[in-house]
Structures are given as structure tokens and as C-alpha cells.
Image 1: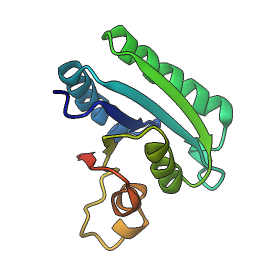
Image 2: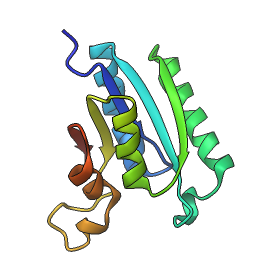
Image 3: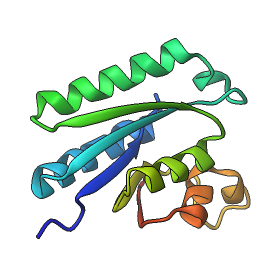
Image 4: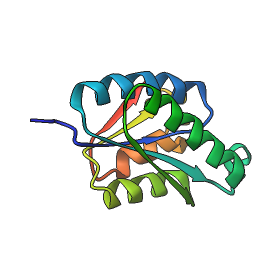
Length: 131
């Protein structure tokens, strides 16, 4: 029995996302499930506001997983990251969302402002946060 048949991995250019990618690879190789990569074009985040940059990030991530024999489906969406991540998780019927922590502790005063904290509180499925 595959525990996590469908995994959603939101990607960006952060160090935390790269670290989480290693965990996603191990998880997918062990489970053999379906991996969805998501990148969100966020107008309010300068680093992720370019559709061309987001497409490039998705293609690089897809290539990395394909090199390891992990089939992926790439999804690009525009919107507010936390809400978009949760909406896509619901659409693809994700069993798990894997995210980097962005280095904010969950008890930190700014934790409520982090995308990861918002996803944890809104997610339709379990969220694995990779520190």
C-alpha cells in the first residue's frame, strides 16, 4: 500500500525548497506515487512575480526529478501562495504537501505571516515541513 499516492511540492528558488527537494526525492522513490510540482506567480512577491522565471523554476525542478526517474506534473498558477497551494492540493487530491520552512520557527512572532504557517492552517491534507 502506498501511503502517499499524490504529493504536492511547491517550488521556488529558496534554499529551503532545495533542501525539501531532497526529502521529496526520497519520499517519491520509496512510495512510487505521483508528484505534482507547483510554482505560484505571486504579484505581491517580487522574486516570484515573473511568469517566465516561474516557468524556468518549474522546468529545472521537473528536470531534477526526471533525472532520478520520478515522473512529475508541473502546475503554474497565479495568486496568493498559501491559498493557491491549498487550492491545488484539493484539486489534485493530494495526500501530502511537502514544503521548506523558510527558516521561520513556528513559535516566532512572524510565523503567522509565513506561507508555510498559512498552508499548515488551511491545508486539506497533511503538510510535511522540511527545516
